[in-house]
Image (cartoon, rainbow, N blue to C red):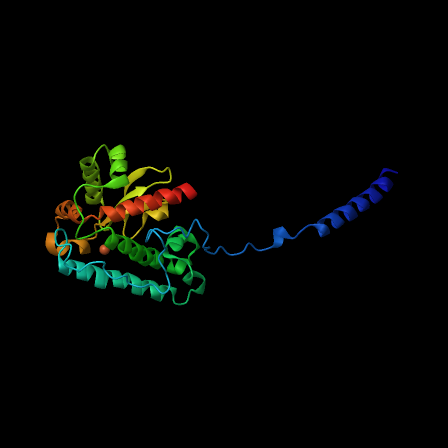
Length: 265
Ligand SMILES: [Fe+2]
């Protein structure tokens, strides 16, 4: 009798279960779409210039905004020419070669690409990291120096530096120490971090602070190619002299842009 009752119940439950499964959406069997970089407002927020991001394809070498010898208070003309015309040009050329067969990446800004580096195909990821980073870092670098630069900081950045580091001398000392401590090649930066605070950070090779969610307000190149002809191994002397060409007007514009971008995010 019991067996007799179990049989139709089992059959009934099987039919109900079968109907239920057949009506379910097939999410579990669908393949997850491959992750691809997107140009959302967050990832495309510019840092190359205060008003526009850096075009990745075709990448183009921006002209120096002054003569190669104009920064001789800190950097000699030959170093500037080699640094800009050869080193920066090489990053641009390598980037264009890497992106030649990558239509999905070509419409992205450099900033978007570096912020979403894991979405870049693995076989070109390091090439993009080094050369997109090199292109972005140097594009910022040329702008934040000027023949009319140097002296004490001005405007809002001066106040922010004093509030964060006590005074300009203390900030400059910490910045130079971070640049001196960078082993091998890299950069030293003043950034606005995700908490809205000024912070000194150092990055290796051609990494840019946006890869860690920081906005680069100013940065100094501590690769040997930036100083070796005049300073040889004396990186500390280069770091000290560099302040003679720091463009506080442009740095104030970048500080303002960083603050506005953070307020929007
Ligand atoms: Fe450089």
